[in-house]
Image 1 (cartoon, rainbow, N blue to C red):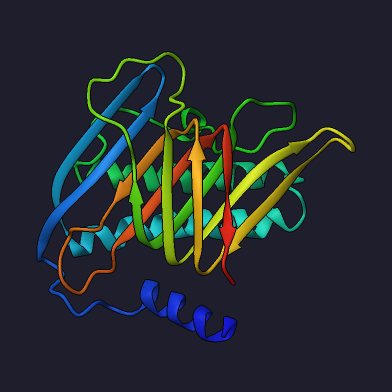
Image 2 (image 1 turned 60 degrees about the vertical axis):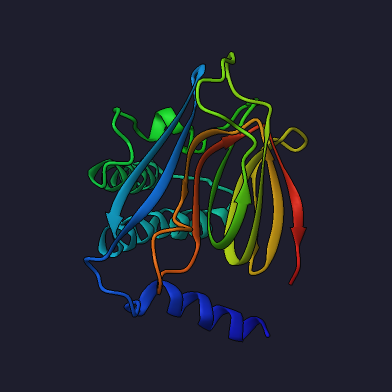
Length: 217
């Protein structure tokens, strides 16, 4: 079953989709943090959506690779992760979903040792979500409203700092999963309505105060 799931996920990311590449559909992007909440909606092509997902997948591949050794990174590896995150952000901005300047450091996705309130999280999958947020809501720091996500198949990785012994720990879920993110600051993109032939993809890049849920496989 797991092998079949791997094949399905790889195929969904790698095989050209049946819809026309230039077909456009609405995509929602939420930018949360630094005392603000922005909801940007724009019509983008399936080709643009595929490019964003490809860039985010590269970030996730690096997190999976370095997570196996608890993020004991060299300077070159840190630069590699930072460049991959910045490339993904640039692709999101190019699609008109991120009007303001943002980088990897601002998203908090660069692993660092020390006790932190928020933990880096990267996630991509096909499924659905519920975000009880609304434009114009005032808050300080980061929102404590939850984000509920269910993936039929997908990947979620999160870094946590362990005090004893002091080290960074990386845990991940792969496959069918249901989880909640509390106190999120970062970028959330919903591709659910882009059009026929494109799976209802969700992308999450940023930091969270708490991530909890169930890995069904």
